[in-house]
Length: 333
Image 1 (cartoon, rainbow, N blue to C red):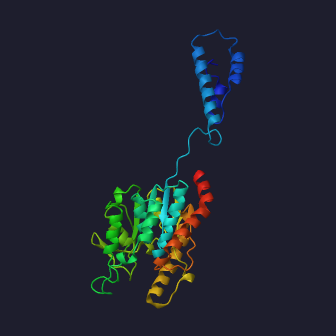
Image 2 (image 1 turned 120 degrees about the vertical axis):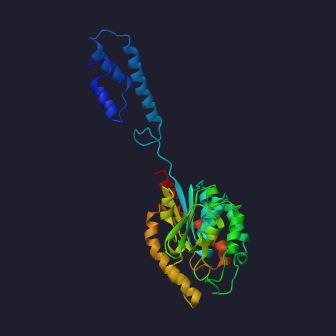
Image 3 (image 1 turned 90 degrees about the horizontal axis):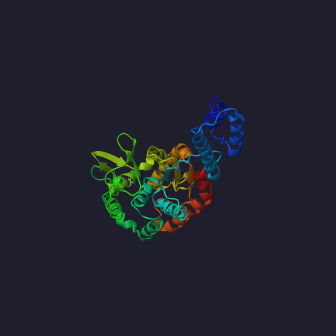
């Protein structure tokens, strides 16, 4: 048996990560086992090193805030904020962002679909919740409604989308998607294939325009020779795309309208009701993979009700505050 490496202590120390040998226990062991052995000067430094290591690890373990005897810090989650589709109901996203910022919670990744892509782009460019609130209150919806002759030419749709694209690019200081302060993803639907597309680079305003191009309302956006329409058709709350971008903790904001609350009269009403039914079915699967789902109570607010923007912002704040305790607890764990 070697003096410096008693087999039982070596096995216990190195194979049980939660065992820290104390000084008294070590000295007692060495007195019993070292007595017959002649003193060797080289063993003194070895014992001190062993004892110092034991006491040092013990101090680290006792001072650590981690559970058990783990000496490794837990990995910080990558927080993804997912902002869903909902046209004018999207003002509620601003209230959620304000509530999160008030608690010091800021996303590492932001992904938006349709109306959510507008807010996502502005947030990613560096805008705060208060800045977004100010922009929302000053927004004149007429400035983004560049009307065209109905169903004329190659593209169907009443609104061209050029004005929306220009407004977004102006408000993000003409940053491209890859130049944003926060990694940004914008979801749209490729019209020909029906597949969801996640834009991670390129013209921010054009990508947002594509994501917001509700069929029959906006004309499709053309990017790289392909036509794109509303991202809400494939991902009304694009949780899976946030995971694809690397988010390990997803906060999803669901502003989709419930079919029961929609006015299904008239051509536009029927279109909106059809989209609501489809989005509800998609959300049943998509939202399951979110860590926290915030659903503002927007009741019967329609997607075209820009006059209720203040109420929508407040509803977003209230909904986020209601989830705040659970959100913080899950972030800690």
